[in-house]
Image (cartoon, rainbow over all chains, first blue to last red; front, top):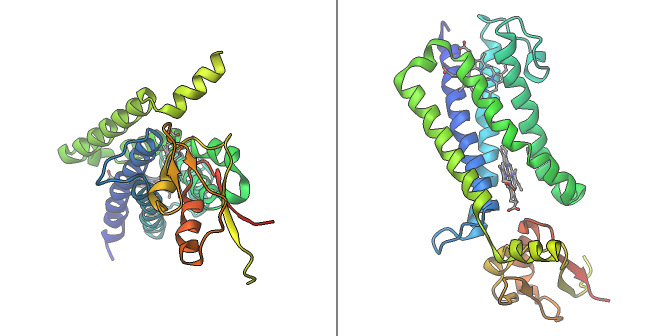
Length: 186
Length: 70
Ligand code: HEM
Ligand code: HEM
């Protein structure tokens, strides 16, 4: 099989990073209440959810191919327990943290009605930590790949997209937020 | 399944006026001038039960419910 598994792992790693970025951006846009006739809110919601599930699929292939490939000697345990691997313990550990967080975010979302809004939100907001941790993993472990022009451009584009979405989300106003603020301060 | 009539209710405290329910179910939901849903007390017609369930599931703040009518 040669190096094909290793390449598969790297390729799916980059795709996972891209999908995770898109999911995070859509989540922030959703919470920031962008609407337009062509993108009604419920489509945004559905795309956000479905993209997150697609992210999981690519993540699964990314992880499985990295482990099945014998070169780096990564164990299944390294996927969920951070910082215990022999191969790049720190950068791979960041990947494991990202893996645990993404599972928590998705599982709590699928059980949203069961666990109640407060818990869902508390876990869901960890997405804002999940994203940088996952990206750091990719940048750090990518080694020579990260210095390729197009890979670097991809990371920068992802970072710019998340930054814009988050700033927008923090600045946006809507009638409900205004009403709640008034109720708080009066 | 029994055919108890169901009706839509909104929890005013948790509702954050996202307006998604209105997009999904314009037949039964209208919004007031601040964007909060206004519901009537009628049972949800059988033909609209499926979209009503979708609206309930899609509420970002879990404020919309389908309740059995007393
Ligand atoms: C990879 C997994 C996911 C990530 C990284 C993610 C990320 C995010 C982010 C960053 C936000 C914005 C939160 C805020 O600023 O208040 C958000 C909002 C939201 N997410 Fe996700 N999400 C994921 C999966 C899901 C899934 C599976 C669902 C399924 C129901 C979901 C439903 C929602 C909803 C309803 C909101 C909007 C909350 C609001 O508008 O108040 N998410 N998500
Ligand atoms: C959301 C979670 C994750 C994302 C977004 C992600 C993304 C990435 C990216 C972008 C790369 C670099 C590819 C390249 O530049 O060639 C990479 C490499 C890698 N990732 Fe992940 N990853 C995640 C989770 C994990 C997990 C849980 C593991 C655990 C097994 C893992 C193992 C690896 C390995 C072994 C490499 C290749 C290192 C090398 O080629 O030297 N990743 N990942």
